[in-house]
Length: 193
Image (cartoon, rainbow, N blue to C red; front, top):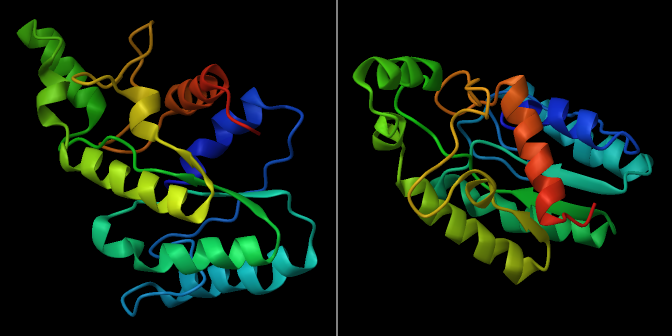
């Protein structure tokens, strides 16, 4: 779902690119897996790596997931596998997450006349994870997209667009407006693809 929520915005914003989506729930998009991941998801990811990426011409892989510090152990091997197969890769970092659905927080903020209320419900540990993933990407020489940099300043993260529409429909997944916002921000920062 953390890769799927990017597809709409990328597809709309980069019409010259053909974005394929290979996503499944309950495992990470890595070449090796942890024991607690869904076997169905693992099979899909294995098919992507062992068949699709080996037999089809894919210019770039965009890796996105619900990353946590304890789940990054399989990412280096994945980056190395992609590089060994001469496939460019962009690693997307974690999205700012909230302890309540963002639309609910926005309504509470309006009722309380407190526009900063959603910021008090953000998981601040994500910034550390973002820094850890940025270093991981740098060590492996791959492009890194910090979703924190795209959405956040030092103290504030965007939760609604200029019209007031929520950018997330729950605590961590983009709405269509949020997906478009992320893709637009990618063009603003000059992504290499």
